[in-house]
Image: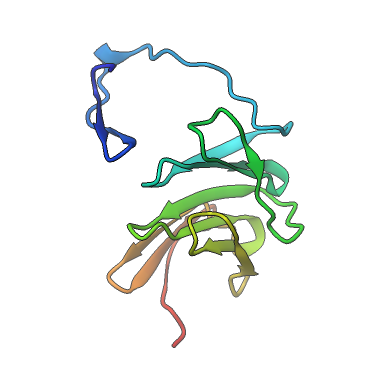
Length: 145
């Protein structure tokens, strides 16, 4: 195992990536779509999700050897961020307020849009609220009960 990485419950986690650890060995992965990818997310079960341009998202159950497309209700904008919680729930975010949520480890997603349709690059749940980050800056969101 390369220095700076530790193995924990079937998932590699970054312990400390130092300049002396570079360069890292890498290999091109082709999930089956042309275009740019902006992010990836790993789940506790060892599965992975990659996402990017034109609403393309793919899921791998075999450490990236094969990739299956994820259906996101014909969304064609840029997917820009992902958050995974401890229960395996996933939120993908994108342009024009697009949000896709999965509560089954990425097998299926429900889609929608945030009010005002802000582009969201990242989100972080914090004590019952959600911090949203994007080109327009930071904003707090709270669930509408």
